[in-house]
Image 1 (cartoon, helix red, strand yellow):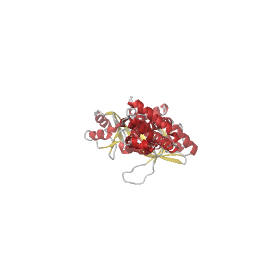
Image 2 (cartoon, rainbow, N blue to C red):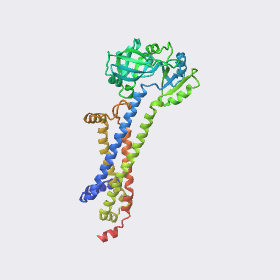
Image 3 (cartoon, one colour):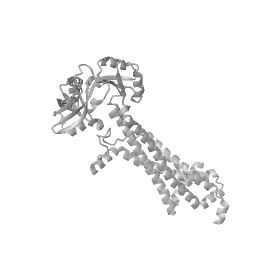
Image 4 (cartoon, one colour):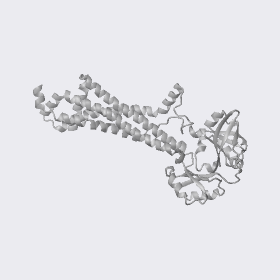
Length: 414
């Protein structure tokens, strides 16, 4: 009963305060401030969720979670290394690879690339990279015969497509450190890797047999790549393998190259929450100003209510509802606008990029070349509750001041 009465009077106070233009303007600005703060934070958190999703889908599902790489020499007993690694229950896949750097050439155009020799059937156990390559291109790596799958960024730089031929120039190491001409190999492009990011501009795939042949490795490999149940435990798992692997190998994990991206995402997410609290806190000061002016404007009504027997609790509740309604309205408006923009953020940013002719995220620098988004209901709930809570806290002092009014002095002055 009490809450219904205080809510009713609070709504009447907020509606009839339009006669005071200044109070009405400050009240409106506080609602708009909360709405803008909520909207901006929802957009920021949705972008961070999108980056985290793409990190999992396009990076952690493609790159090895760990690598066992030979030290200054290839691994001859790679089958034994693979079997020893798979004894760890956290490792669910292992595959051999050959890795080297080459300069790819097509006419007068050149592009550096990391060539990775793989066995497609075994690579599927540690990576989902095949889903980003057309089927024919992936299957061509089974047979070898000097075929290559190029990252889209490399293919665009060389201006080549499927069916074209490129020349790969490989360094020719010499035991006596004499300068030798690079080894040149003609390779046919049979597929394009389209991840949409930095990997497209640096990686090219060949068959393991071709890599071993071109580097004169025989049956040895550069290393063994690993897939783990939980990639975020990669460092600990690789530490466990230190005493298990008998070969002299480097133990690497994905965080060495891409770990900073994940840490940056978490840091920016924390900053977004801090920005949300600061923005809504600033908007909440307007609620304090609005309620203080409303208390001054409604002294007669407060005095009449007190003479009718209204307790402090009722007076406080009236102004609490008066302020909280601004917070609720701002939260609802901000959530609605933020959700609509977040769901279409990728399309909106793409349209802006096309309009100004500038790419905000370059695939040659960042791990993706578009702005991703993912709206989570948890974020909406947390942001809304935070805004409403801060609005509620902003009503404490004005509602307390309203209770301290002396009805006798107010009415006698009137």
